Image 1 (cartoon, rainbow, N blue to C red):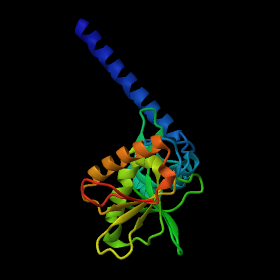
Image 2: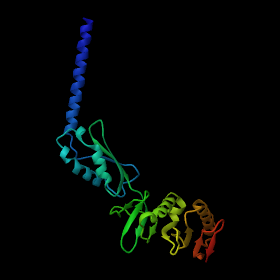
Image 3: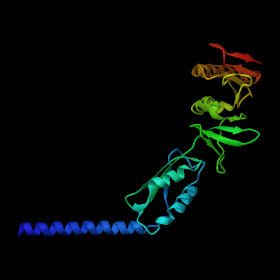
Image 4: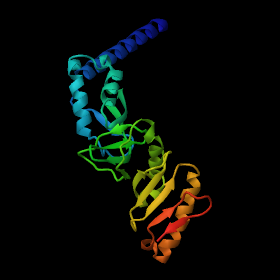
Length: 242
């Protein structure tokens, strides 16, 4: 008799689990695709808005409106979002409650190109990206036309500036030095309108360290406006022109 009662309890429990699973699946299938939870992984939604991501996804979710959420091709949605020039990466997931979520990584601009023919950004990976109607990034500007491998060193230098608090505050422009065979750069400053002749990227850490020490001195002396150029190309010294 005890064994018989155990079998009945087990059967009833199995029935309840199957019923609840079926009920949850049916309820999730009926949920609309009109609202997707969007998370921006790298800070605020500066270049692409929540509304834009929702609109893009809802547009692609229309064929699934009368189907179970489990039928949605999440990889296809991720690829679709990543074709947006403002988005570096997208991850689409389905929660236990049957709701769709998206984790968006926006592109991070490090350089703005503004020449006679066009204006655009380069992101930290060296990918070209358009300007945004939502936000204007405070990054160094170059008037050079960048193409092919020519811009690789400039992107490396731009990333270095972005990741250094001192340089990020002081440097507003980067240009190639005309007439040089290799990539040699000139930096424009925010304070004092001083031109910094940086040269190539060799001994980059040493050049930046020298520049910081020199700036500490001239800022304390309030003599920054006395200088026209600061040349960092020479080993173990700074050559200035007033």
